[in-house]
Amino acid sequence: DSALSGLRCTAPAPAGAACRRPDGGPDGGPDGGRGGAGRRPSARSMGKRIAGFLALHPALILWLSVLGYLRPRLTLGFLGAAAFHELGHLLALWAMGARPDALRLGLFGASLDIPAMGYGQSFFCYASGPLFSFLLWGLSPWLPTAAGISLCLGLFNLLPISGLDGAGMLSCLLCLRWEPARADRLCLWVSRCTAALVLLGGLMGLRAGLGPGPLLISVALFLRAMGLLPL
View 1 (cartoon, rainbow, N blue to C red):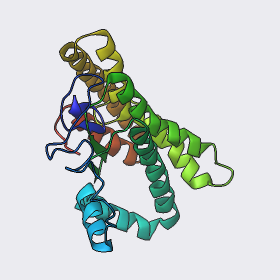
View 2 (cartoon, one colour):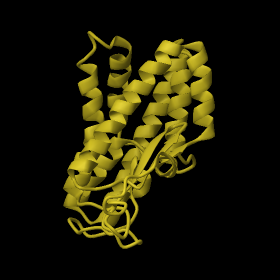
View 3 (spheres, rainbow, N blue to C red):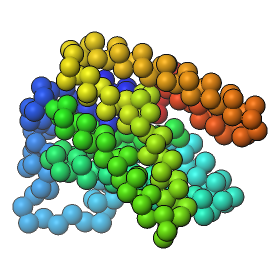
View 4 (cartoon, rainbow, N blue to C red):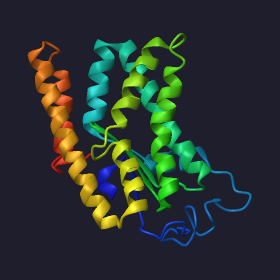
């Protein structure tokens, strides 16, 4: 189910089946994504490709601008940790021979539009993001700020809540055991129950003096789990 995780299939296909784009090419165009034999793309065409691949939500740009002004070191650490996390997903997709169609960055997370893959391949791609986050955490003696944020980001994404990698990993495992419709219903139930527990934790954190930050994050996760908050 595309609503359960940050990797979204752009076209359904049987497990292990080769995916073709509507334009005829297996990975991005009628010529297979090569862009024409012997033709080097210009800087302008590369800019158009990047603009078509990467989508930034205006609210995210505003939030990063304010945070960068107030806490520049924290902002750089967060951006580095997030980029390394997404790099894990992209490298895993490249290893599986899949080419993502778009990377969407929103205020409450990121998502990659990808061709349909088998459940085992999808699980590997979901798990690669948190895995890279933990690898960056191992560099804590040299990058303490980014490493600390990366550890939190990796653990956070393992939660089985809609929009996070943990939900996608759980969905893949359940689909190996049960039919997809039943697995999706169970994933949705687990997602909402987990989000409710996280929301309770955010309320307790507010009473304990941790500030409104954890509560706002838990509210956003709960709304995502209930299908009320898009990316």
